[in-house]
Image (cartoon, rainbow, N blue to C red; front, side):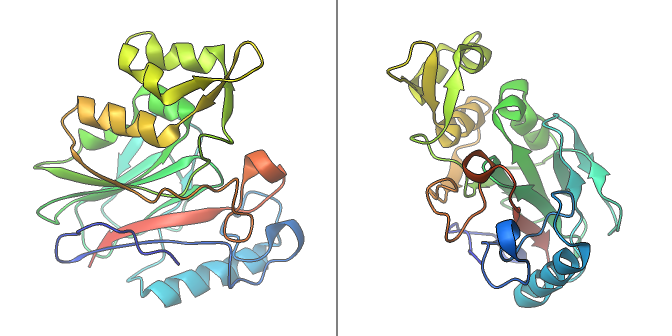
Amino acid sequence: MITPDWQLPPGIRAVSSTRQQGVSTGKYKSLNLGMHVGDVPEHVAENRKRVIAYAGMPSAPVWMNQTHSTTVLSVDQPTDKALDADGIFTQNPGIVCAVMTADCLPVLLTNTAGTEVAAVHAGWRGLAHGILEEAVSCFSGEVMVWLGPAIGKTAFEVGDDVVEAFTRNDPVAEQAFEAREQVGKWSADLEMLAKQRLHRIGVERVSASGLCTYSDSHNFFSFRRDGVTGRQASFIWIE
């Protein structure tokens, strides 16, 4: 497990998993937390139990059916049902907000008072359409953010459509793209894009793991690298 490197307010806990120390085999080896990727359900259930126990979570995480939307749901009690959303927000202690990723950017948020938290799934579509802005709008007071492991700039190739989606109304976003040798292909920096959008709405306290899922096959699942693969997850809760 990874402990985010940020100064959390008292009573807030946050962790992020790697692919190590699980029971899944083959392409899902070993700590796959995704029930939807073709792994043996019993293996995933055991992996989830291990994460809950290791991190000392007060309840089973609230999971999402992530679809690259801008939907952020407010949750006031634990649930076994996976929610149709790309962000979970809560003000209630004991509710563990979870976000699964395998290249997209996991984003954890809290206010400095330690009374509100959220977990967000931010791929390029979600970022471009405003998932972070939607999440931050749920909070009261100053917001702190941690950007977890995601595909790095050198590995994340995109086309002109992605560049256009970000730069159409924000010329500053051009800084997050670097042209490749092939015409119409670019390297995209997800971390930078997220920071730019957060800074634009006044969120200055942003930390980042700097870890690349694509280049570190030992520790992370990567959909872009492997196709069929597992999922790691990031979690945040109020104790």
